[in-house]
Length: 323
Image: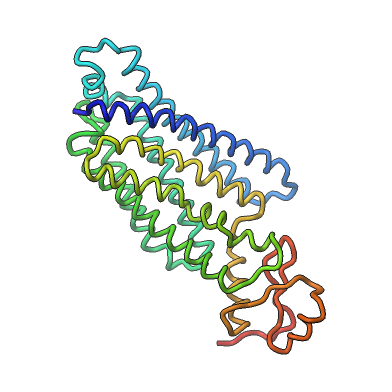
């Protein structure tokens, strides 16, 4: 039966979730403001607005059910026979708790699916998403089993067979995010180290902020803390479950970068690699159009790449490359 450490963790995480929910709301309305400002809206822009709206609804369900359950346990039924721990034991499978669990699991799966797509966009290679897709499907199966065993009348998310599926699901989610985060980070760093950018607009695609947001790094770090503490059976693990809120914040940040035209697109990877292939060397010099005379004198070594504001690269007057 959970003890005082678990109760304190439950209380702390409810407060942290409230703060993170406020962050999610701010980011969501920033996204709506940006979509209104954009005169030329793509189909991806519209999709991301719908996607993030669904994510916001799901995370709202999760947060409100957790807060409501805490109120019932600590305030409304403060005199429950056996105390707070007995109330938790007897009502862990209440319908709205199962509803909240289903909401956050769906949000997690949707966020991971978006990360799969971003992995494909940044690598521009379908083979890179095969193994992460298998992990994603496995986590889906664990989610369904976990909801079934924890939502039964005698079920309990924190005890019995449900904990085995919870451990499997959290481990698969963590593994998925570690792999995808590593692949995305390595890709951005690989390209960033081989090209030098002459303007801030181009540099934003491979900077520290791009790495953190595109790779969902905060979510991965949070899930690591949760999986480790949950795996060793510590009641403090529940305090780290606040990482679940990043299943909404992460796609919201990605959507905001897409709408502000700072996120990676498939053609960006192609153009970068084309530039590297043409150079025949590890470092390529990117210059503004109309560079000074010194750069012009060096064109016999290699054709300079032009990175005007608002675009990534343009290779001109070079015959088609053949391997």
